Amino acid sequence: MENIIFQKTLNEQGRITGLEIGGRLVLENSQELKKGFLAVIDCLSDRVKITALNIAEIDLSCIQLFVAFIKHMNVNHVIYQFEWNLDEDQQTLLENVGLSNEIYLNNSYA
Image 1 (cartoon, rainbow, N blue to C red):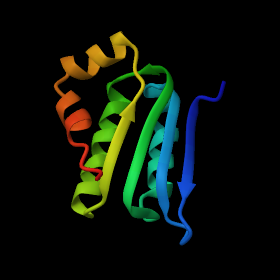
Image 2 (image 1 turned 180 degrees about the horizontal axis):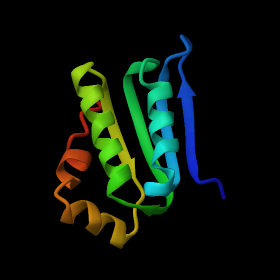
Image 3 (image 1 turned 30 degrees about the vertical axis):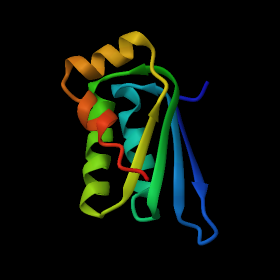
Image 4 (image 1 turned 90 degrees about the horizontal axis):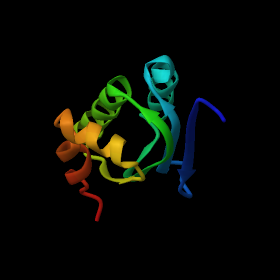
């Protein structure tokens, strides 16, 4: 299994409308995830769906990268939606660190 799964979906204009992210989202792979976000940051469509699936592990370092990515999208008026496929422990981690509302409830994709 790859460390990080980072797949893009493009529209007719070549802008990113979808991201699928998964794998081992932990500190040792955080640079790889950061590079993935930086590679797409200027190519986003005005609407993006981010699907987090097949997450083997997730920790705070990668959650912080997701939050930074969310803040960038907010500043740049990108409408986004997250679709998470987390196990109970991963969901509890997000809730315990107080980030579940920012990541789950800030789904402004229409």
